[in-house]
Image 1 (tube, rainbow, N blue to C red):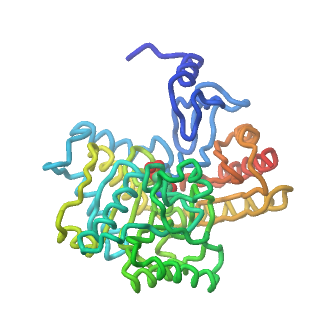
Image 2 (tube, rainbow, N blue to C red):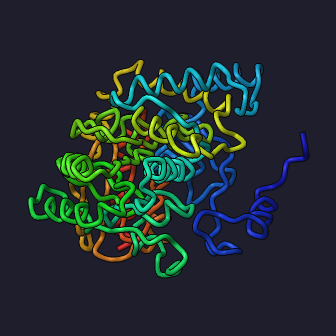
Image 3 (tube, rainbow, N blue to C red):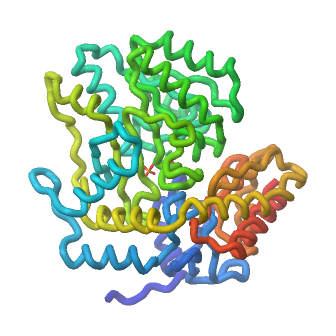
Length: 431
Ligand SMILES: *Cc1c(COP(=O)(O)O)cnc(C)c1O
């Protein structure tokens, strides 16, 4: 083992050399140094504002649904580690990836039958887009190559995903002229509005000749603004897509695996897509892995084309270690009363955040499944809000006008109450 570095030395090297998400170089705010994590707690190498442990209110960006250092997931990783961490997927296959793909087909809506295992959510969206464009090319309709989405979405940070992120939050201004130009509907209202449904139908009809697919996050828009909408819009999209020969892609990278109260958010509307993206909680937050599923119709269409292959193959495709942990994570989730746990978290957040709605500067408080959101009437003072949460012993990562939490499902009632106190403190300090 190399000589351990002191916290001060690590933070100096971090500042000098390491990019952090959405950050400048060198970073402006000093990150907290995490030494280890267990259950729902992050242990800090150096106490911050009197706390050396923080309850993770973020599940490491939606992913650590079972908490950290889970014995079952650790065992799955160790067992696979002793067999092999990785082998290439071209010309080779292995049990962890085969089991995972079969499992995903089994638990997702019926018509999805084929699985592409990618190495991150953004890549799974790139693959979804490639599938859709290639499907129409193979069908002799190469003009169908644009995407339609609604505003307020987030689909990742690589090129195609960026082009369907919310044009205001996704730095479209900066990339004007460089990104593919997609078709944007207005952001979906929270409740069902017949006029908005007509707006969706009309836009799909008008652009049908050039549209390869509609891509949306069903029910909850995550990093694009933490907005919830009526599941009925998913049926509107399904019908309009079917009527006008447009494929439908659901990005459930954030909403998948129970977060909204159903295993997949599309189940709120009993609608299934032609292509589905999964990620984030897929490995219980252990390793980077994502999946793009498609129907036989899409796969057959591609395979009948002039170029009858899907030209995509990441080096770490189907990584055995990540696949084995993903299998264990899905089994762990389905082997327990996950619906009961998500309902319990939903009730805890609902109760704990109710008061927050009365704070000055708070515009809206909303809870769905294991997601709690406090929206301010202005941009959050991020440093002040983060510090206030840390003082309460909780890790939160506010952005724009939002202070939000999506805790691990295993968070107990006491810790949930503490997360809610921290959200309230962050809303007071950050407004
Ligand atoms: C996080 C996220 C992505 C991108 O996933 P990465 O693994 O960060 O590339 C795409 N879509 C949605 C809905 C997400 O929440």
